[in-house]
Length: 299
Image 1 (cartoon, rainbow, N blue to C red):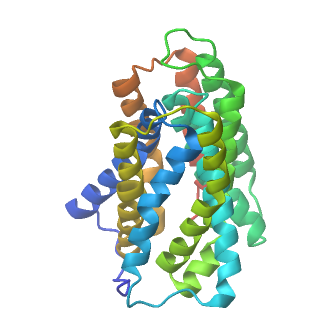
Image 2: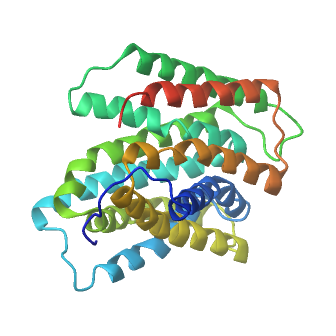
């Protein structure tokens, strides 16, 4: 990566465009995953995503500094947690929830990032963060309750499905927090290259099980979803995010977390016709309020 440029708070058209583009790419990831799941089982679809992403990471590292052997165990463990558990759990949950519900539950990741960072770096946790966490959990219950058993939805939401998505949010937040020091020392891309490869290897037994027990055909839509998730969400999204962090204060760049669920819900409504009732709307407000409270006065 190039050396970071001076950080300024000026909101230029280029930065606004980059933040909006990233919010759209990441926000649409769950509706696109749901689309791919219509023909392909969850573990196989997730594996296809990283089968696309892993070679691109390693191609980028040709001629660049690789991760030293001493750091490999930590990077592998991160891949197992963030990808083997986090991304697979998200796909398993999407199989049992609507895209809109999964989008909103996944929006709690920043809250868990703050919580785990507080524990990891032995910082004090304010009452505002605990209030935000409580509000977010109340919102999750409301959005799941509003969609459970609603015959108008493209696929009913179950509490098991919501639980899988929540597990995904926890695992991905752990991945983010525990990768901070490793990425600062060795670089984000070398760490991500090893972690994604480790996560892909972790999925292979599950892929074998699905191939042996489930009759399916990976159609063009599933391949298109895998390419979108692998190229735009995983690779391009990471580099765009790093560019924002190198040129813009993190507290401003992180505001895209508030936009992602908006675009995710728009995508879910456009693709699957997901309808949102009163409880869903209240739940969304509680979750967004929880994110705001948990991130208040924190970088």
